[in-house]
Amino acid sequence: MKLNWKKATFSNTYKLYDNGREVGELVDKTFSSISTGSLLNKKFRFETKGFLKQTTDVFDVETNKKVGNITYNGFCSKATATFNNETFVWKYENIWNSKWSFNQKEKALVTATLSSKGGTAVSRTEEAVYLITALFINNYYKKLALAAMIAIFIPIWMASIN
Image (cartoon, rainbow, N blue to C red; front, side, top):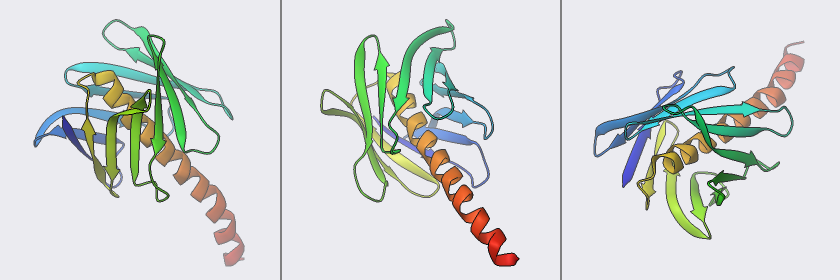
């Protein structure tokens, strides 16, 4: 399966497409610890908790049962997701962070290439929870990178106008 996603500049919603047909979305509100995603008629909720060492629980919305969890490394380059005692590793594949993969036992289940407003993912699985989780992790790290840039550049900008 090949998925494309697009996001408008100031939108918090990623629209997911398969051959030009909308098949899902990922909605991530800026100041909320809860995100929602749907893909292939399945809906998921991502609840992030913690401050310095955050984790995210993944819920199936239909049953309201926890189906997995995500832990993040401190360098914003890797994450581990667990579903039914199976471990999956999300990681960047290049130094520019424009390619990533979601792997199980060193086998890439999902690989993706990013652009400024979207991306393309090629999946070797039809399992919706894996695909939407991989996209959620990508968005989580993009939000962290943006927050870090703001934290660094606002003091510099403020100092330059004084």
